[in-house]
Structures are given as structure tokens and as C-alpha cells.
Image 1 (cartoon, helix red, strand yellow):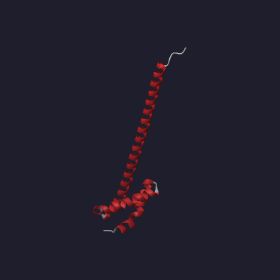
Image 2 (tube, one colour):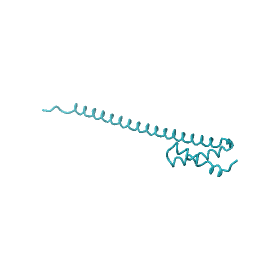
Image 3 (cartoon, rainbow, N blue to C red):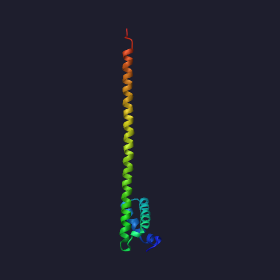
Image 4 (cartoon, one colour):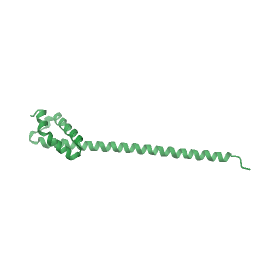
Length: 115
């Protein structure tokens, strides 16, 4: 079995290129590459040397997809929160207009008739 350093030095350039082709961003590709090797090393008992490169590429792809799903979920949550805030503001605004109308109507009814 390869040491971590040998594993990384042998396959990191290929994994990085693949991750960069998926993400299109250097920083994200570097993160995906690092995460790929950490995951592979943690599960090194599952590694078969004849399929090692394919195994690493699969981890990289899955890591990329997980990041995309997480990012999408975060954007949706943020969007939902913004819609809720906007809805609350609209309800408050509507409520305040209704209160003002009622107040003005009451004042009109209590105003002495003009001479």
C-alpha cells in the first residue's frame, strides 16, 4: 500500500485537473482535491490499487456534487427567509394602513358638523 505522500504526489495533479474541470474555480478545485485525499485516506481499506485513480475521481465528483447541493440548499433557505421577511413587512404595512383608515373614519364621525 502507498503512503499518503506517495498517494498524493502520484494522483493529486490528475484529481486537481478533474476537479477544476468540474468547478471552473481554482480555489474550489483545490478544496475538492484536498477533501478527496482525506476521504480516500480515511477509507484506505476500501482502496484497490488497480482501480485507485477511478476511485479518487469518483470521490472528487461526489464531493463536487455535495458542495453544489449544499450551496443550492443554502441559497433556497436564504431566499425563503427573504420572502418571509418581505411578506411580514407587507402584512405590517397593510395592517398599519387599515389601522390608519379606521382611525380616520372614527375621527370623521366625531368631528362636529361644519357651519
